[in-house]
Image (cartoon, rainbow, N blue to C red):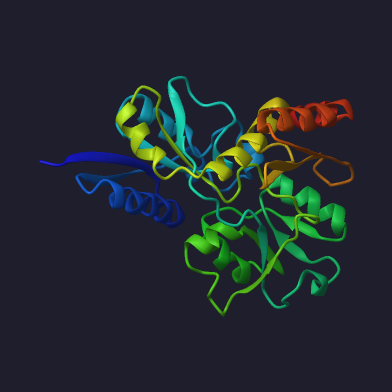
Length: 309
């Protein structure tokens, strides 16, 4: 009789698509196992009428899943890396980070087809303070309004609630197969306009530190370059003690042996944005150094002001 591996996943279409992708990759290596998805509804899924920054706390989309891991209800969990707090629950580890999808944000437009064509005062939907702050720096005339829900819901709201544009992660659209949808008016947002979230485009497969069988299994789908880049980003996030209530961005790429990392912290209206870049070979050192530079330039004050609001 085959051993059954229980995989924890959020209930959204995107989360289930991501979990099935991971399962199919593992089945190629381990046909002797059966895999079953256990759907878990998280706090972030239940509370949809409040912006993420006001729901409070870290791990809005992972805490219930981590609890299921800790009590052995599931064997591993598939998360979007950008949802995973920089500190995991005790006894849990990231067992694998597969190759990253596009880290970019992208506009989905209602009528126009380009950022430059959006009218003065355009209504742009996003519940991300990171996206809002950077867009307002670029276009202070934008009317940023919160929009929550899964990808399907937000695409419906684009037209029903008369947004001029909404912002989605390109990776989610790619994984759902919607980049080929010719009815969607899409445009990538350049990192110079909107630097991406830490870990955006990457998956995090979390498991128990003590479960060597699962750890060995997950190691077969780990992508080393993605893991190195995400490490720099997450060290940066941890040093700043950042969460969704703070406009923080960080993105690393690896070119040859060199890691190129840029980090950003800003206030909510984009009137003050701090940025720093670093190049080196040690991801942890690079992430720490960029965070330390931003802290020396006043990031701590910005973060404290936002947390005390």
